[in-house]
Length: 495
Image (tube, rainbow, N blue to C red; front, side, top):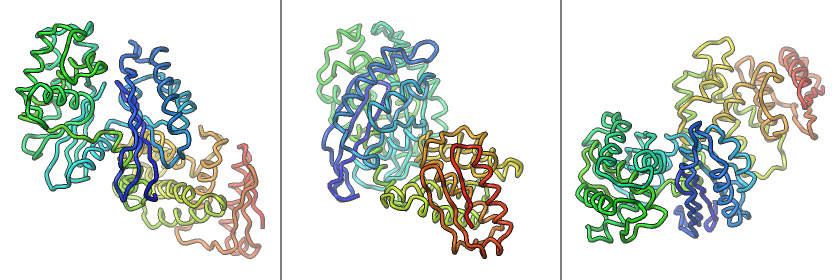
């Protein structure tokens, strides 16, 4: 991306929705604008874990306002992510379908591990570079992320279903503060976080950093009330709890720097923070400027380059773990990429490069299921990808990749795919053709083969002498043309 390019990150959190706009400046992202709205979707989950109509409406209304600010942006400039509430909501598709239309950009429901990775990226990019081992803690509305890392490398990441919103609802339902309620909330939080003690043992970090809403709010209040700047201590947390107990209810809390939108959830957030301090044996924590939204912005930059796109590393790790035939995977990828460039000639180079990279991932992993069983290995591979922990990938991206792996062979009519998605159909067709052309597991002769599209008619042209030279490949291609007859698309083999 060129210097001066504007980037936007949309963070659909459980307590607040945030829009961060930054300008690229020699590898750094400088803030241009920041919008935050307290939507409290985390409060809008009913007993069946469905978002209420009011919660849906609040979210849509906020995104409509965000849309006005980023309407002129293009897809590569924007990434929108949703976290724990939409991970839990059973009717999330109802929200997301309309939210996509309103915002104008797709919204990715990211896993807890991916949220943790992006939080660490946001924190680390806004800290001075050093070789220190860092523990990063982020207490959100319905989840808490813990990350161990060094420099820009997040090494250990976990997400726990405990946060300021759900703990406030459960243990301070009427906003009433009592010592018994705080004790119950902290014990319950420690029970959820208990396994973190083995994953994040004492002594595995040099400095603990705190990110995002709860920790930032606590740090602001403590500093405004005379506690040392730049640090949160266990003594400070005890003092703050005493102030809440003295106020007796959330609506009566009067503390400098405590914003109105934070007051209703401060009890739950403080309980979780105290539990983290006690469980991990923390003496103090340094509040950090970076958070999830900054991590999303820097991840947009990383995705522009193959060498820095963490998704490439995830694909390589999966390929190595499942023992794929690397030469064959690379061979299929090269052929599929060449066919896609022919099929989508005239597409902007930047877009074509991104689409070719996605296709290359599918080619690299198309035989991943073979380690489980050669019979129906494409089905096993698709299942693995749908359930894999792959840093850098959002769940919809992984599902799209799994559909390519599932569809690279076999009957097309049984695939649950959207045949009106021209890009996906082009990628799938090129992958299937590449697998056919590479069936002998050697580099195929492509001279004289030309793939072109006219609407939903795709024609593969081949020389007559190519057909006679490679009769088995020609036979498989004719069978492939028959397979596409059961879809809205037509593949014609011209020779």
